[in-house]
Image 1: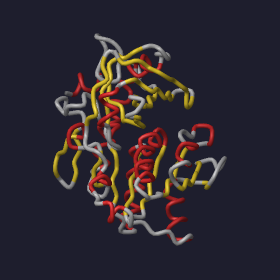
Image 2: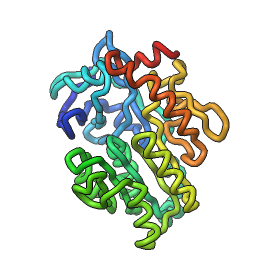
Image 3: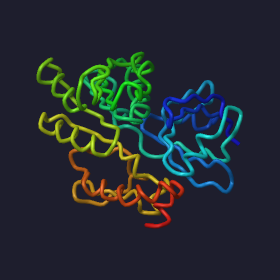
Amino acid sequence: MFEIVSKRDLSPNITEMKVKAPRVASSAKPGQFVIVRVDEHGERIPLTICDYDPEAGTVTIVTQTIGLSSKKINSLNEGDAFADFAGPLGRPSDLLDLPQEELEKQRVLFVAGGVGTAPVYPQAKWLKEHGVTADVIIGAKTKDIFTYVDEMKQVANVYLCTDDGSEGFHGMVTGLMKDLIENQGKQYDRCVIIGPMIMMKFAALATKEWNIPTMVSLNALMVDGTGMCGACRVTVDGQTRFTCVEGPEFDGHKVDFDEAMRRQNMYRDHNKTHSDNDKCKCHG
């Protein structure tokens, strides 16, 4: 059993938990994910690793309530335990592949939207630990639903934007990106974008115009964590790839976002009344 050692609500439907999982914590890397089961009858739910502490033996996950299974996860409390907490799975961020001397020269921009802020955090934190202070854009509809802002400010230069102008730049993340690059003279060697699919699509289109190599995380497509159900299929550079086993990060300039969004829309209404992984059972 994997005990929940702390829990806090980040917003009305987004919950952070630190889970005691020493083996996962000792080998986790930024960009990877875990698969959890609430109990022996529960579904396998893939969740991105948002932080890890090898010394304490804990792994931090953030769960947004969408279907019945994620609702059940968020109903757990400190002292409760998961039946399974398997990982780390998936490929780590490609930033980890760079030699230290090359890494130190990188000017990195992260663009985070919604719950995408949480999985951006371990990458920005890892860079800070390796001598690189990245710029991070965090976008939200309104200031009340920002998450991980204080944590991010400890490891990166943070720029906020809201659709309603309640805090930071008034507008979309793409507008703030343009302001930083075209008006403030910022230059970037690479960009990592994590958030809603539509946001990643247009942010990636923008970085393509500026010739900035870009990675996007397609963790929202993952279901069983093995690729066997086929729900995580995505077309990248004309080839079918499986997010669970070959991702979750891919070249944002080569992803067929329109196809990915069509697949998401197939599942959205179904998931309102069914479990989170019923999309796998119905379309596997």
